[in-house]
Length: 454
Image (cartoon, rainbow, N blue to C red):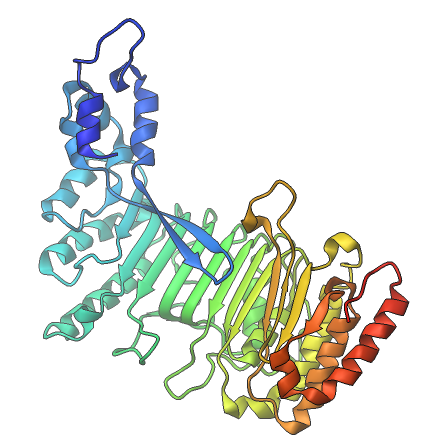
């Protein structure tokens, strides 16, 4: 809601027996409208579907000067002053807003683009730190690149480290949503050591109400989520959080209510993946039950993708998107991961044997398996289900047979009854064409009610 619209709608000049204006609304409804104006829409796009994100924003304080009625209502509602600090204003604004929401939960927000490296903004942020016990939403964006390259680089790094320490040293039992982004640039390594958090992140007490956790460019090794069993969304971008597959399994076994899992691993400075994807000697495949998972998005090396996919057990109705970053030194380990993926895929789609479970299109490209279903009848296009699996660009001669075994498995699954080889794949692996046709023929005999494309 703009200040101009607010002034116009609150004007008493509107008259007539059948006309009403915003001042005729009860205070509760007016407050609801104002609260809605404090949310900004954002999204994380995965190439197929956007993950909607709503971020808190401060109320335009000028709305409290529209008229006396509005001012009385706004000043009496602490929640309208709870988005702190106001990074674009004087530091005193934070103290004023704190006094107006002295007992209510706080939305601690440093928005994208905020000049947090300036002394006035840092002073405003520091004023919130003694009140962390009341924080309900934590949305901190310290990704301003210039802050880490200018003359005050050391001071700014120390400030970010101080904020990170305060977050770990104070109980934050009211937390419902966490979104923390630190400096990181995809095309170059970080210019400083990213913040380190303890395994529990918020180690001074449980966070039983936490529903959303989004982290970017930090180290939480190993990540433990034992006190966040009701977590719904977990997004980890350039976060070192697991040393090996066992860490991954133990972490995600504590999040049975998870609905969205996003993991991006762009690798370390020396070109290695963040965690050792060697198959576990302790845990079996699909040992992490995530019965509510609707979206899995993984970006990383082929072995990283396979490890995460193979140890999770989630519904075949979920949308899956994986994007690869190939490391040549992983080729020697591909055989085990191809075998692991082949077994996991068979189990994953074992229940998808009816016509309604099958993908309407499925193409094998030279670097991916791309399968999609039509949108649900009467549903939006975003209701369409998809399964996009990255395949390594570099497959050695000794691993080609393992790749073909994987494709044999896919071709034999009813969910992929429309599976086709693209021209790009045929050019790379012409020797598989005859074998593929035979597998499809046997599949048609096994499932005669299914129409199998040639």
